[in-house]
Length: 327
Picture 1: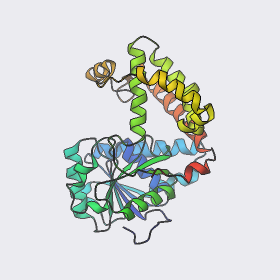
Picture 2: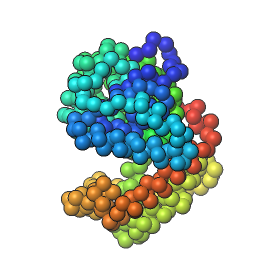
Picture 3: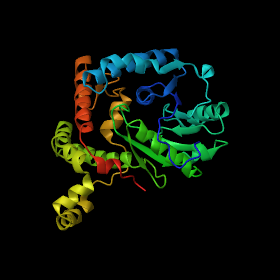
């Protein structure tokens, strides 16, 4: 943990616990910014997949002009991979990014803390598990916090910084500054709430989307078209509250009075989602999901389309957004 109020540079050394899609993307983000990164996983096959994923991401970023092709090899060289036992955890930052299993996360965090220095900041990339339960398992909860990334981490600008019940304020400030230094837009939460900010907003919208489809109002394809052709681009430019200011708050109030009472308040998981998961249809990783069957060409097309949109958004000049943090 740094002694000063702010950190203007990238962390020198980072360990990422978990080499899945998220862990690999987080590792790439820090490596691209110049940090020395160690990436670990329990299975050798996971690390082999991570190497291929890292190469693929670097190739895609070079194709879209986010990095120079000649820099890809140097960035890759900043990332080492190996088993947990072989890692040196005397580093500036440890980021846990394994599966959403409370017991497994506690186990790996305890092991990491025992091998780290007293000032190493330890962060979790959990999307939904309570930070209090993770923090209570640690001997140094003051250096522990949430650092929540979004898929794909190397492309999505947002990173949420979430305090645990006993996180030192200097740790939060350091994480915010490090996130900024690696090119992210950090949003610092004043307190933890289940799901944090982005996922609560996302799942509120998803609940309504499933309701519309289940009632036969529209298809899944229609929902995606509405988001891609209207809400997504509009909110990317100005955000929902700015959009309401532009529309007029009198109009906003009238629509809110009419719609809020009739929006879905269903608390169960969607039947369609339950059925697909039971059938083993888990999306692109199994070749079948909400939009039916995916072959390799279809998967690549979706990924390319997402990358193109994120690259276009990254080109926007949004200085006011970068200078504003949620307090």
